[in-house]
Length: 550
Image (tube, rainbow, N blue to C red; front, side, top):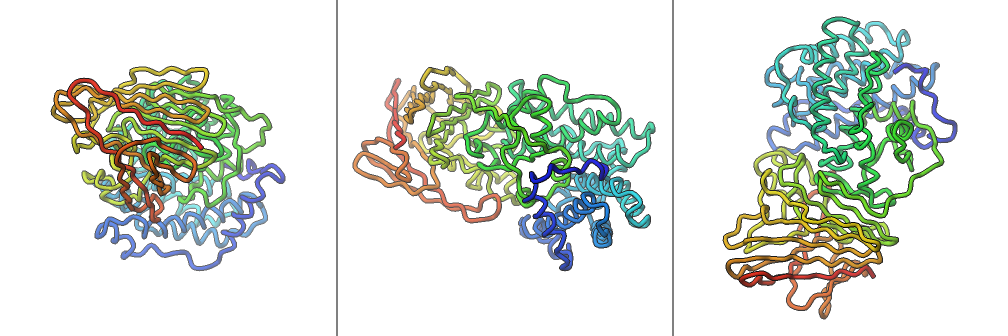
């Protein structure tokens, strides 16, 4: 990306530019990526200690590069030192991903972050051209070639080929952009682009026709963002337009359909409730597909991984657009089996799907209530990423487990993981005053005597939710209904109230279980599980819970 395309709209990116200036002005020593930090993941499984240092280095790199590309008179001496230091790194991959590069070795492991680094460096050296010392530029080109383009050109399979999720688009998109920037037209470049194209096909195949991202809005930003960035560069170089696809238009609309309002989004799977959305990406999608333009300009620090592609395209593409599309009253994504229905003060969301989705949580039939900017009955989103979080012990962690979701426990048994454990949509109907959604959860459980379990939601936009679990049983079955919140419940005479905002009418015993874990940023996360025990008799029975927004 040449420096001439960096023309921020006057007055529109002031805060972001101030952030860049502040980080670029930091002349403290660049954090060292020593052996102890690198090795720590393999000993303890902790990712944060190394990654914090790694991303601090990327922040400095990006700020200095942005400053240089914004100001043709800027001194690039310190940037050259940082570029040289990045070339010195043992590997551009994260320790958690090194196992994906066994065929090539750590320094040629082509993971998400190695690909991103290659793209970043390629765009910086091509954008600055002769302003950089030739020794620096040549070393950068050599390291990008050795670490990323050689594996990309090698016919041996790369570990992420076939993932069908954000890995396909980020790795192929970032590495493909590096190739487009640094590799002259050749059979080798054509082969690399063909490989990237196949990865992008698999990425798109991971989406249903409804355009919904099963990994949540955060990973939509990541995976679809790099798809769009690569598609635009490919179009500029070859004329091939990957965005000219009806399915891509549906994917572009996904965040708007998952929105809870006020910058909040349904935090299903390993997502967060308040993800950041790159302003440049949203601007291009608004121009191309008529989707909503950016409502805010993210801070430089909102992306804690400091990805150059998002920053650079915000500086290059962002334009203010006055027209803002209003949220629909109701959205339904049939392939994902997500529903979001919005009232004036409260929003209801629920999900079906299956229990082997990308970044999966055990959460079939889970729901949330978002009231006046706060999620009262919650989905906790992503927990802290560690080695065991992405292992066979994943569901021992609170956030992805059934314990963290408002779903029933049947005869002491939680829902089970697996593709066959699914929630079928029996009925979805948008009504004048709300929505009705029925999900068959029977396949989610392996309980002797359970013949059928259907969860029925009836939501009124005035702020009332009726949840009914209909059970068909061959024997009396103990059930525990679970309702999860980050707000401590107040149990009264026949009621449970959260934050003086949502009230559950309930007669009979109620227990409160307090659970703690680390959230995605390794901060303490406290949740309250309201447990309502009951028994489903032999035959058919219905168990209804009424929630009222105060």
